[in-house]
Image (cartoon, rainbow, N blue to C red; front, side):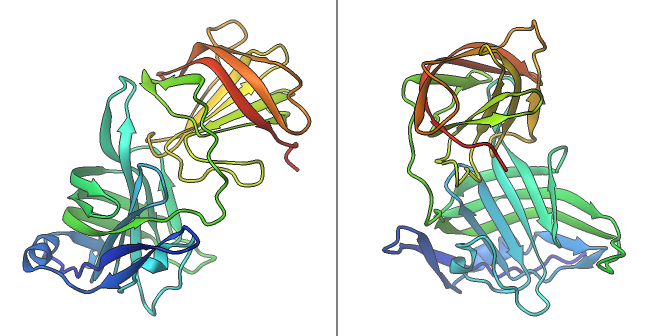
Length: 317
C-alpha cells in the first residue's frame, strides 16, 4: 500500500486576555517532515484516508490529544469542546499519556481512541512509541492500532475498521485551558501515592451518596474542580467512598495516567484507608479530613496520609 502524504499544520501558541490559550495555524511544512509523515498509513475498510493535518494539544494535564484529519482545521478550532467539520472531512483522535504501571513506572501508551462518533477507552488499544512530546513543540513517534466499529442500523452506517500504522509528526497547538475553570486548591498537607508515585492533589470535594451504601464520596483530583465544575482531562482522579464511621469501602481511579478505569472494594475487613473529619461531611463550606492507610485497587496500591480541606457539595440530583 502506498504511503499517504500528510500536510502538517504548524501552530503558534498565543494567550488571549481571558487566559485561554488560542492558536493560529500556518501551512509551512519542511520536506523532511512531510517525507516522514508520508510513511503513516491510515485506512478505513482497506481504503486509504487522504490525511492532510496532524496536530497535538493538551487540556491542562500531561495527556496529549493527537488529531489526524483529511481537512485542514486550525489550532484555534480545537480550543473548545467541539468544532465544525469541513464537508466530507474524516478524522480520528488518539489520546496518549505517560501511563502508570502497577510497579510505579511510567511508559507512553494510548488511553483513548475516537473515530466516527465512537470513543474506545480501556483495554488493549494498540501501541504508541514517542521520541519527543510537548503540547507546544509537537509530538513525534509511531502509532499502531486497529479500531473496529460495528454496523449501526439506526445511523445507517456499515461496519467499519480503522487501521493506523507508522511514524507520525504532529505539530503542537499548545495548551487549551478552560476559560471558566475553578481555581486550584492544592492539598499540601496530604500525601497521596498510587503505585508508590506521589500524586499532587489540586482539588478535594466531598458529597453525599447512596452507592454502594449511604455514605460520602471524597473526590481527589490533580485538576482544579468545584461542586459545579468537575475536573476533566485530569492526570488522575481518585474517588474514595467513605462509610459511616470513616472506613473507605470502595475506591475508583481514572485519568490520563491510567490505561483504564480502576475500581475495587477492600471488603468489610480488608486493609483500607480511614477518613476522620473535624466536622460534618454534610452542609456547605469546607471540612478538614485526615486520611490514613492503604488499599489495593486492581493491583495498584493507593496510600494516603495527612490532612486535606474538602469543599462540601450538595447531593447529586
